[in-house]
Image (tube, rainbow, N blue to C red; front, side, top):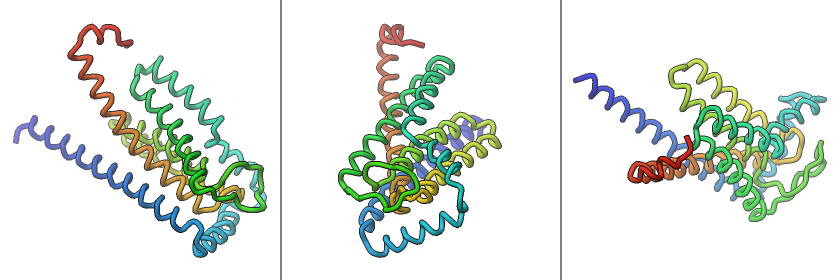
Length: 239
Protein backbone atom coordinates (compact mmCIF):
# COMPACT_ATOMS: atom_id res chain seq x y z
CA UNK A 1 0.00 0.00 0.00
CA UNK A 2 1.49 3.33 -1.06
CA UNK A 3 1.97 6.24 1.32
CA UNK A 4 -0.59 8.32 -0.61
CA UNK A 5 -3.22 5.59 -0.35
CA UNK A 6 -2.58 5.18 3.37
CA UNK A 7 -3.10 8.91 3.87
CA UNK A 8 -6.37 8.78 1.96
CA UNK A 9 -7.53 5.81 4.01
CA UNK A 10 -6.55 7.49 7.26
CA UNK A 11 -8.36 10.68 6.25
CA UNK A 12 -11.48 8.77 5.25
CA UNK A 13 -11.43 6.82 8.51
CA UNK A 14 -11.10 10.03 10.51
CA UNK A 15 -13.99 11.58 8.57
CA UNK A 16 -16.24 8.58 9.22
CA UNK A 17 -15.33 8.58 12.90
CA UNK A 18 -16.04 12.28 13.36
CA UNK A 19 -19.27 12.00 11.36
CA UNK A 20 -20.45 9.05 13.47
CA UNK A 21 -19.62 10.83 16.73
CA UNK A 22 -21.37 14.02 15.54
CA UNK A 23 -24.46 12.11 14.47
CA UNK A 24 -24.51 10.16 17.73
CA UNK A 25 -24.17 13.26 19.91
CA UNK A 26 -26.77 15.19 17.93
CA UNK A 27 -29.26 12.35 18.10
CA UNK A 28 -28.57 11.83 21.79
CA UNK A 29 -29.16 15.53 22.47
CA UNK A 30 -32.50 15.59 20.67
CA UNK A 31 -33.67 12.32 22.27
CA UNK A 32 -32.59 13.44 25.74
CA UNK A 33 -34.39 16.76 25.42
CA UNK A 34 -37.60 15.15 24.16
CA UNK A 35 -37.50 12.58 26.97
CA UNK A 36 -37.00 15.27 29.61
CA UNK A 37 -39.71 17.47 28.14
CA UNK A 38 -42.21 14.61 28.46
CA UNK A 39 -41.26 13.91 32.06
CA UNK A 40 -40.92 17.49 33.24
CA UNK A 41 -44.31 17.65 34.98
CA UNK A 42 -44.24 14.04 36.13
CA UNK A 43 -44.10 13.16 39.83
CA UNK A 44 -40.91 11.12 39.35
CA UNK A 45 -39.23 14.18 37.84
CA UNK A 46 -40.35 16.27 40.84
CA UNK A 47 -38.77 13.73 43.18
CA UNK A 48 -35.55 13.77 41.16
CA UNK A 49 -35.46 17.58 41.15
CA UNK A 50 -35.99 17.76 44.92
CA UNK A 51 -33.16 15.30 45.49
CA UNK A 52 -30.92 17.27 43.13
CA UNK A 53 -31.33 20.44 45.24
CA UNK A 54 -29.99 18.58 48.27
CA UNK A 55 -27.26 16.82 46.29
CA UNK A 56 -25.81 20.01 44.78
CA UNK A 57 -25.81 21.70 48.18
CA UNK A 58 -23.86 18.76 49.60
CA UNK A 59 -21.51 18.60 46.58
CA UNK A 60 -20.64 22.29 46.31
CA UNK A 61 -20.89 22.94 50.03
CA UNK A 62 -22.90 25.38 52.13
CA UNK A 63 -22.11 29.09 52.30
CA UNK A 64 -20.55 29.09 48.81
CA UNK A 65 -23.04 31.37 47.12
CA UNK A 66 -20.50 34.06 46.18
CA UNK A 67 -18.22 31.83 44.09
CA UNK A 68 -21.20 29.88 42.76
CA UNK A 69 -22.68 33.10 41.39
CA UNK A 70 -19.28 33.94 39.86
CA UNK A 71 -19.29 30.61 38.01
CA UNK A 72 -22.89 30.95 36.85
CA UNK A 73 -22.10 34.45 35.51
CA UNK A 74 -19.83 32.80 32.90
CA UNK A 75 -22.98 31.70 31.03
CA UNK A 76 -24.90 34.96 31.40
CA UNK A 77 -25.96 36.78 28.25
CA UNK A 78 -23.85 39.83 29.12
CA UNK A 79 -20.67 37.79 29.60
CA UNK A 80 -21.19 35.60 26.53
CA UNK A 81 -21.98 38.70 24.43
CA UNK A 82 -18.74 40.47 25.43
CA UNK A 83 -16.58 37.35 25.03
CA UNK A 84 -18.33 36.42 21.80
CA UNK A 85 -17.72 39.85 20.25
CA UNK A 86 -14.08 39.75 21.34
CA UNK A 87 -13.73 36.26 19.84
CA UNK A 88 -15.31 37.39 16.55
CA UNK A 89 -12.94 40.37 16.37
CA UNK A 90 -9.92 38.14 17.04
CA UNK A 91 -10.99 35.56 14.44
CA UNK A 92 -11.65 38.24 11.82
CA UNK A 93 -8.79 40.67 12.39
CA UNK A 94 -6.00 38.48 13.73
CA UNK A 95 -6.62 34.91 12.57
CA UNK A 96 -8.53 35.79 9.36
CA UNK A 97 -10.92 32.90 10.00
CA UNK A 98 -14.05 34.35 8.44
CA UNK A 99 -16.22 31.26 8.66
CA UNK A 100 -15.18 30.52 12.23
CA UNK A 101 -16.16 34.09 13.11
CA UNK A 102 -19.59 33.49 11.54
CA UNK A 103 -20.15 30.43 13.72
CA UNK A 104 -19.89 32.42 16.96
CA UNK A 105 -22.89 34.78 16.51
CA UNK A 106 -24.98 32.16 14.71
CA UNK A 107 -24.53 29.62 17.50
CA UNK A 108 -24.92 32.14 20.33
CA UNK A 109 -27.92 34.03 18.95
CA UNK A 110 -29.56 30.85 17.72
CA UNK A 111 -29.20 29.28 21.15
CA UNK A 112 -30.72 32.30 22.90
CA UNK A 113 -33.61 32.51 20.43
CA UNK A 114 -34.36 28.80 20.57
CA UNK A 115 -34.28 28.88 24.36
CA UNK A 116 -36.82 31.70 24.50
CA UNK A 117 -39.12 29.81 22.13
CA UNK A 118 -38.87 26.58 24.13
CA UNK A 119 -39.58 28.42 27.39
CA UNK A 120 -42.80 29.78 25.93
CA UNK A 121 -43.82 26.33 24.70
CA UNK A 122 -43.35 24.56 28.04
CA UNK A 123 -44.10 27.55 30.30
CA UNK A 124 -42.67 25.95 33.45
CA UNK A 125 -42.43 28.26 36.50
CA UNK A 126 -39.14 28.58 38.33
CA UNK A 127 -38.51 26.83 41.67
CA UNK A 128 -39.73 28.43 44.86
CA UNK A 129 -37.31 30.05 47.33
CA UNK A 130 -34.37 30.84 45.00
CA UNK A 131 -31.07 31.88 46.57
CA UNK A 132 -30.59 34.68 44.04
CA UNK A 133 -32.82 36.78 41.82
CA UNK A 134 -33.97 35.29 38.51
CA UNK A 135 -36.77 36.19 36.14
CA UNK A 136 -38.61 34.45 33.36
CA UNK A 137 -39.59 30.84 32.89
CA UNK A 138 -37.63 27.77 33.89
CA UNK A 139 -37.60 25.04 31.22
CA UNK A 140 -35.10 24.64 29.65
CA UNK A 141 -32.35 26.48 31.51
CA UNK A 142 -31.01 29.37 29.46
CA UNK A 143 -27.63 29.36 31.21
CA UNK A 144 -27.22 25.63 30.64
CA UNK A 145 -28.26 25.89 26.99
CA UNK A 146 -26.02 28.87 26.27
CA UNK A 147 -23.04 27.30 28.05
CA UNK A 148 -23.46 24.01 26.17
CA UNK A 149 -23.64 25.72 22.78
CA UNK A 150 -21.06 28.51 23.33
CA UNK A 151 -18.43 26.55 25.25
CA UNK A 152 -19.26 23.54 23.10
CA UNK A 153 -18.32 25.70 20.10
CA UNK A 154 -15.01 26.50 21.78
CA UNK A 155 -14.50 22.76 22.24
CA UNK A 156 -15.10 22.34 18.50
CA UNK A 157 -12.54 25.07 17.74
CA UNK A 158 -9.97 23.47 20.05
CA UNK A 159 -10.58 19.99 18.65
CA UNK A 160 -10.26 21.27 15.06
CA UNK A 161 -7.25 23.56 15.48
CA UNK A 162 -5.10 21.68 18.03
CA UNK A 163 -4.72 18.42 16.11
CA UNK A 164 -0.93 18.58 16.34
CA UNK A 165 -0.89 19.43 20.04
CA UNK A 166 -2.81 16.51 21.54
CA UNK A 167 -2.03 17.19 25.20
CA UNK A 168 -3.21 20.81 25.04
CA UNK A 169 -6.16 19.69 22.94
CA UNK A 170 -7.43 17.27 25.57
CA UNK A 171 -6.75 19.67 28.45
CA UNK A 172 -8.75 22.48 26.81
CA UNK A 173 -11.62 20.13 25.94
CA UNK A 174 -11.71 18.72 29.48
CA UNK A 175 -11.69 22.18 31.08
CA UNK A 176 -14.47 23.50 28.86
CA UNK A 177 -16.59 20.37 29.29
CA UNK A 178 -16.11 20.60 33.05
CA UNK A 179 -17.17 24.24 32.95
CA UNK A 180 -20.42 23.35 31.17
CA UNK A 181 -21.22 20.78 33.86
CA UNK A 182 -20.22 23.13 36.68
CA UNK A 183 -22.41 25.96 35.36
CA UNK A 184 -25.35 23.56 35.25
CA UNK A 185 -24.72 22.52 38.86
CA UNK A 186 -24.65 26.16 39.99
CA UNK A 187 -28.09 26.78 38.53
CA UNK A 188 -29.53 23.97 40.64
CA UNK A 189 -27.49 25.03 43.69
CA UNK A 190 -28.95 28.55 43.48
CA UNK A 191 -32.44 27.06 43.14
CA UNK A 192 -33.18 29.15 40.06
CA UNK A 193 -33.66 25.98 37.97
CA UNK A 194 -34.67 22.40 38.48
CA UNK A 195 -32.15 19.72 37.54
CA UNK A 196 -34.40 18.64 34.67
CA UNK A 197 -34.28 22.22 33.34
CA UNK A 198 -30.49 22.08 33.32
CA UNK A 199 -30.23 18.65 31.71
CA UNK A 200 -32.71 19.69 29.02
CA UNK A 201 -30.81 22.94 28.44
CA UNK A 202 -27.51 21.12 27.96
CA UNK A 203 -29.16 18.59 25.63
CA UNK A 204 -30.85 21.31 23.55
CA UNK A 205 -27.68 23.43 23.41
CA UNK A 206 -25.56 20.54 22.16
CA UNK A 207 -28.22 19.51 19.66
CA UNK A 208 -28.39 23.07 18.26
CA UNK A 209 -24.59 23.28 18.06
CA UNK A 210 -24.30 19.98 16.21
CA UNK A 211 -27.01 21.06 13.77
CA UNK A 212 -25.55 24.55 13.19
CA UNK A 213 -21.93 23.54 12.50
CA UNK A 214 -22.53 21.20 9.52
CA UNK A 215 -25.15 23.56 8.08
CA UNK A 216 -22.67 26.43 8.06
CA UNK A 217 -19.96 24.14 6.72
CA UNK A 218 -22.20 23.32 3.77
CA UNK A 219 -22.86 27.03 3.25
CA UNK A 220 -19.12 27.68 3.33
CA UNK A 221 -18.50 25.01 0.68
CA UNK A 222 -21.22 26.38 -1.59
CA UNK A 223 -19.88 29.93 -1.35
CA UNK A 224 -16.30 28.73 -1.88
CA UNK A 225 -17.33 26.87 -5.04
CA UNK A 226 -19.11 29.98 -6.29
CA UNK A 227 -16.02 32.11 -5.77
CA UNK A 228 -13.83 29.58 -7.53
CA UNK A 229 -16.17 29.65 -10.52
CA UNK A 230 -16.27 33.46 -10.59
CA UNK A 231 -12.78 34.99 -10.09
CA UNK A 232 -14.25 38.51 -9.99
CA UNK A 233 -16.18 37.64 -6.83
CA UNK A 234 -13.06 36.14 -5.31
CA UNK A 235 -11.15 39.39 -5.90
CA UNK A 236 -13.83 41.33 -3.99
CA UNK A 237 -13.81 38.87 -1.07
CA UNK A 238 -11.90 40.34 1.94
CA UNK A 239 -8.88 38.29 2.94
